[in-house]
Image (tube, rainbow, N blue to C red; front, side, top):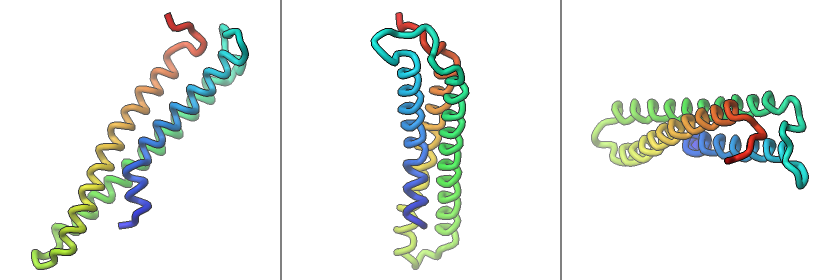
Length: 132
C-alpha cells in the first residue's frame, strides 16, 4: 500500500474542509468588510458563484479521499482473507493497513458531512448580514 494514498485517505477530507472554511470565510469577510465600515452587500457581484465553486471543489476532493480510503480498505480486506495463517508478517501489516483504511473511511465520512453542512450555511445565509 502506498503511503501517499494512505495519507490522502486519512487527511484528504479534513484538509478539504479546512480549505473550504479558510477560503470561504476569508473571501466573504473581505468582500463584506474591506475597510472600517461593513458593507450591506458584497463588493464582488459574483461572490456566491466563487463560494459555490470552492464548495464543489472541496466536496469533490473529500469524495475522492473517501473513495481512495474505501478502495484501500477493500484491497487490504481481500488480501487478509486470501493470506494463509502461516504468514504472520503479512497479517500484522495487513491489519495495520486495514485499520488505517477504515480510519480514512470514517474520517472522510465525517468531513464530507461537515463540508455539506458548511456549504449549506454559506449558500443559505445572506453574505453580509449582521450577527444579532
